[in-house]
Image (cartoon, rainbow over all chains, first blue to last red; front, side, top):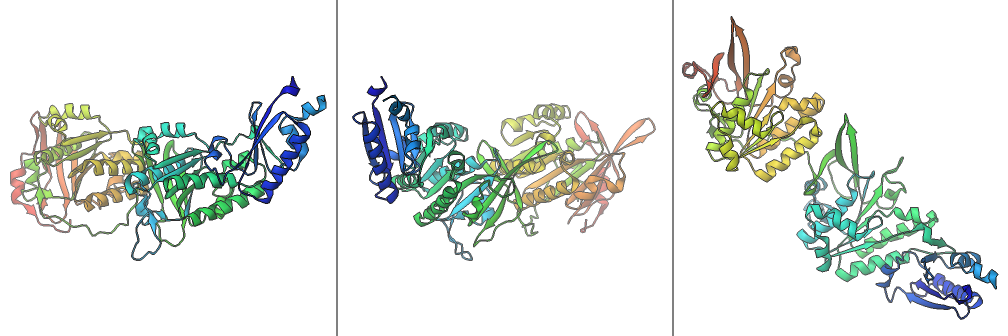
Length: 98
Length: 486
């Protein structure tokens, strides 16, 4: 059951700042390692689409939003702590099941 | 926005009654103003009024970024003030952005900044061309995020950014224990800081406002009382007491021909203030009613503040003396405002008086009795309030009549009214009840009348179902005492 769980993730950044680039690199790596084939990741640049910030209540950059599965979770920061990101996204439990 | 000749700092009108006077034109244009105060003191309302009035009166679109209430709640809360936020939003004049921070759904890992907030604010400002911005209450961020060092740095950057953006901003902050705001925002927003206060003294709540600092501008430094009512916030500026109002040589009747006879047969000056003192049951209210009646007959609006009787009671009682006030209430020439003195603080009474006078534009104001207000404040406070009231009335050329209850038991020297207000009044009439054998004899003395001759006698008078009669008034007319010094 848990293996079939799809993850819908959105990463909000604002331009190509070092923090944003690092966050993109980090999340792409974690997804490949832990959620291969079970996820979709959308990177939204608020400098290009500022109107999208309000909908997901974004105030900090970078912010990773887990839209699916619910409830919505948000992780702010450059995502450099893998352990905390995985726990925050509730992926940790899945990997132990494998 | 207006430029003052002496003051190069451009200012933006606040849209709040009285606040523009105190700040010398409003908040600094293109800069940020910090409004701080404890919970429930009116910060959000002040911010909202600033935005809405800016749109309606100065055609300056505004952004309200709320960290606490949702747009729907805000809209509902100010509906009672006649602010239709939804309409302004539809007209693209207003943007409300509710920044909701749920600590439970947020995890922090690694470095971040508040660029998202900047993007949102920037987008909101640009989308409607906003000139005014309110951030209410930005300190909520500290409750949602753990890295306070980063938050401080980001807030500093935000305030700097607002300045570069050129918007006139209000930032609200919760009152801290040792500093003005909990997070010491006053360190970052330092152009203009305003403190709102809500305190209860002797069970009476008073709201006060003080300008803590205003860089590059002169400002009133007192604490100013303010009122929140159905029109929003209004502040009472306590104007400097200069004695330079114009005077009138016009003479008006007291409403009782026999009483006019005691003043060279004509009456008293228009725009002057009259004080009637006497112990309980000496017909003070009756004389006040005559005064109201005479003004109504001249088609001059009267505002009657009654601190002891309700309008209906006053009208009924006066009717028994053939003084018909009811018809003038119907024709809207007479407005009777009754309230208990202890309902609110002195300043609030004064503010209410101001507001009603502004609204109703009376030519005659009656306060019956002014001594009731002593129960609300200390006598120095009452005196200060009365000085301000009289100053305001005279400044507007309004004829005023005050009655005051004199306590028989009290030492004459310490009598409140005689100490405090008799010197402010232009005309002073004293009423007395004397016991003469088995009868009660009423008498009336004109103690002073500035710039006018007046009777020097103790005049007996009687009250009949036709009103007050002064049998000897005709004689008094001939024996007038010329005393222009009062």
